[in-house]
Image 1 (cartoon, one colour):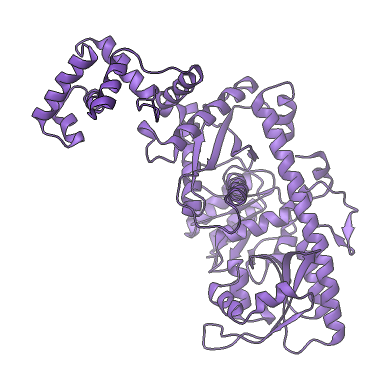
Image 2 (cartoon, rainbow, N blue to C red):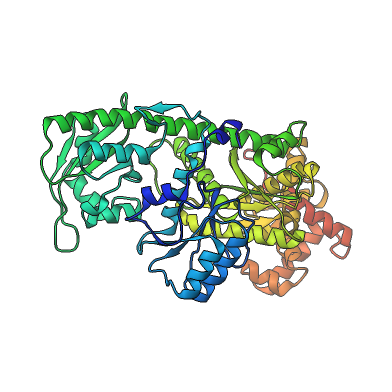
Length: 559
């Protein structure tokens, strides 16, 4: 952690319930003020239970049965957890209450319909306020710098209306209290952390978003159908700008037209929100660069590696290196702007998503983008093979989550028992990512792997690099076959390749080329005659296989 980050205390459970309560979260049982700070957000995994940070808030996804809840509460109490979030309605049986009281762990219900992923993002946004390296005394407009929930509540009090602060894509960044005074559309927006598609379409058709982009004045929005046979209450929105750039917008649910005084208050509030959004962006950029710099120092294994691991909180333990990268050959939805800009944006989105996923599953992990890949470091628990297998499951789960929206490949390096092994493990990750990107041999169609499975393919690619750097060309029998094929438009090289790939099985080789077996046998005799190769000699067979894998076998154009 950055030294300055420790100066500001983390968000407590009471603050989380104040900001996210009534709409997303509800205290079912326990004392939210028992733990004044939350040390991290962790997803409960019954198959791979991580070591929790102090005062963790645990997301109990899929935990419903009262006996499961009680058993989990007892375990969490022994690890000093602050709270357990369960899908509402929470079955508060007498054993569950007793277990919560004994463990000192608050039980919190998550509103039905609210995605767990969105809750995790909201919680991490709250907890990250102390992690951007600013002093306690820094404030903007009398509010803590970058604290968008505090800003939202201040604006709501000023305008006497529940509000949301949204980004340019209509994703909810923060919201005020009193959302129960709004309408079902507002609740649906907050639960999904995104304006519902049907409402967004109506607003687009009415030209609301276009007017927001063009104007620096508040825009009044008439009620829209709420999808339940009723209509929403009116809205007043204003774009949040920094110069010519639109950063987002403020939306107020109102029951009466704004007075000139409230209009001016909303305009001033937009200026304040712009400052906070810029501070959040700057703080996120600083934190991102810091993580990447520390990771880079640790993975290079130089003189600063030990200090970097210490600042990341990962010193003195065996570590696993993980890596993810865009599969730039995979299916991707069209993006606005240039291809390079879209790729850069997707890489950053992938890096942010991976960092969030890794921190949820392994709270003592670190992740950051270096070049075109994003690397993760996490403690290796137990035997090396089991630790690597768990890491593979973590990566596969991540790839499944991002799907085709961000098609990616992923790799696990060998366990680094100490500092000196980190650079070797990172090199293993890079080698596997390249094999997966090339999609050759056993890597064909795969999206995740580790070096002990794909070392042969990695060696072949590296031999190709060596041959290309030296300008190596086929010689001997293979050169003669290539020349013959070029002059006679025949397929002797293809015949030899198919026969070698089939381990000398003529039936399988002829089927692979869709030719009759007798035709294939004739071509194979021509391979021996023209190439002057002895196919009964294992050394000659191996040499031919290696040349076919490593060297370019098609003649250069015009050659």
